[in-house]
Amino acid sequence: MAITKEFAKGEVLYQRGEESTSVFILKTGSAILQSDAGSLQLQAGDVLGLFDVMLQRPYSADAHVRSDIKAIILTKQEVQSLQDGGLVYKIIQTSLKRVDADMPGRWS
Image (cartoon, rainbow, N blue to C red):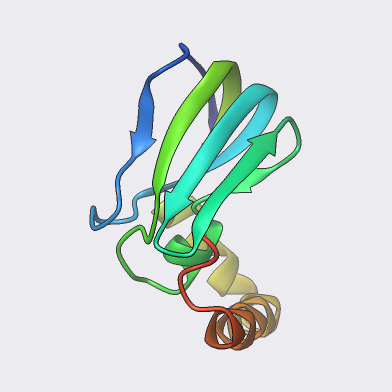
């Protein structure tokens, strides 16, 4: 079951190369993703880690908290449980693979 957790400015949500274990949905605050493709500022409503979890690969960027955040955290297993719905999960996964192929390393 998804949990809500608070993180302080400067905390690391995850680092590039680590096994992707969770998806973070920002409820408040801001974060930054840093990868070889550059950096991306994220704020409330944005999602971190979805590409990597759904594509079953290690995190492809570093995610740091820019200002105190409150985030909903979904585990890899919770995201993969969407697979029980089969078709919806496969459609999303296929779409993410296409987007990632066009801009590798841009998403995390």
